[in-house]
Image (cartoon, rainbow, N blue to C red):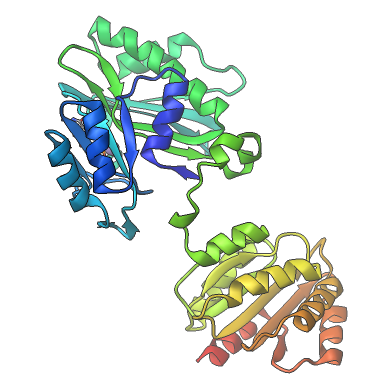
Length: 380
Ligand code: GDP
Ligand code: MN
């Protein structure tokens, strides 16, 4: 789950990482009131779950309340790469002497956390990595060993930061960021830019924060930060039902068991000349309620013209899934044709059950490619 900048900064503050004071606003009038409370120059910042807001005109300095109201008017409603701005973060403006970059993320390849620090902040980190890789200090932290202060020192020297006052502050911030990252069960904590003010004070001016979805159950306060309006309505409904679903652009609704199988089903649909309407993983179970929930979510998308069930029986047996599908079809009225491909454990029994019941609009195929071709044909 991605957090908005203002939410990430709230977590930063809890762990002692310095940030600027700010207020949330959803209207120009609220932006004006926020600027009045904060006093002086402010920054009006679009809160959207995507980066590069500055370049897209979503971050603007304002001289005072009047100007903040004006800038809020300009930014609210702006479309930043498909994300419409509905919320603003109004923050006391900082004077910037230097822009650094600091992040900690999970490096799956090495199975360790990875810190990155560079003096070349402010720009996209991919640019730094591509153009001036030597300026980017990288350091892994062994999760069993945990964080040690010498690691922060190595990172700071590696990035070529030689001002003792900056080094001292960074030592603290790196340690706090690691605690924030571990204790929040984060996948990414990125500060870009991490600024140095003309007075030599270091502060987080931005935040990019991703929390592991699977750990949200133990962070009720973070889970409550989820902004349901930022997701397509189908995905919202899916989340409420506990269905693993991602909306896509095509017309063939997809349901499979296992994320890997569903991913390859999307490919096979493309191979058959069609385009998938969604990703939907039934998971390990094939019980009727799971199938009903998934079908309800899939068919709520008006673009869906046909549905492909791709089931590989492993622990879930093919006959169980077949019964689940039949029960689901009794409970629901589905207008779109459904193609079922059953393979693996008890697939023959499953296919026999479907053939015997022979519901109208249900087609069975033995292979994935044939099933995909059929589903694409029926969607045409
Ligand atoms: P992003 O473009 O989505 O990464 O948004 P940022 O929060 O990083 O802001 C973009 C840029 O706006 C930063 O790199 C800064 O150069 C500038 N900016 C943001 N806040 C301030 C501020 O308080 N004072 C000044 N002078 N510039 C700021
Ligand atoms: Mn940024």
